[in-house]
Image (cartoon, rainbow, N blue to C red; front, top):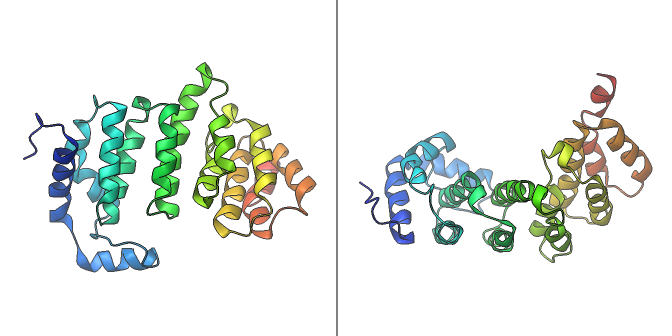
Amino acid sequence: MFPYTDMSTSAICNAIQLALEPWADPARAQGMAAYMKGHFSYMGIATPQRRAAVAAVMRELKSASAKELLAIADALWRLPHREYQYVAIDILSKYSRSLGSKDVPHLLTLAQKKSWWDSVDGLSGAIRDILQCELPSNGKVQVIMDEALEHSDLWVRRIAMIHQLGWRDDTNTERLFRYAKQLAHEQEFFIRKAIGWALRDYAWHDAGMVAGFLEENKAQLSALTYREAGKHLERLQTG
């Protein structure tokens, strides 16, 4: 049983390992690794099982400081199986209100380690919540994403492109469309997909504005981006 009086990073990580190890399934692990094109090793634990297994440990982190949460995430990131990175993302997402924009650079650094769409998009969700929560008190908080858009690492640029997913009325449309145009020339699949995803998401809030942007910039956008952005557009405009 986890000694809850010991809240050190090593104790938390040991508790998480002990909670997950009984659920390891080598047969499932092979399929999960194959799905991720062999980039990572897996224990073979499905998401519902993983979250249930570590729920008790997660609850003990409700009073953890930002420094403690980030240290735990870093430690989990160093562990060999992908499930540990997923737990780190769950922790950062669940306790995003304990973090602030000052911690976003740390999360962007983490996104550049063991990078693939699953971890990057998970970290993006935590960053999204942090920035939206701070937006009412700090109208310039998104400047950090302006800087991320210029980053040499494609995964950091992807986070910048999708950081407003689900923001609806809070969406800074000038940034959304400027980012889309700035990244439109890139050949990278994950960037082109991200542009389409961000535009499609905002179309649920304002289909007309997205339709106008697509029409005006069709020549600059890749076919993938244009297709992704317009997936539900006709239905949204007529419905």
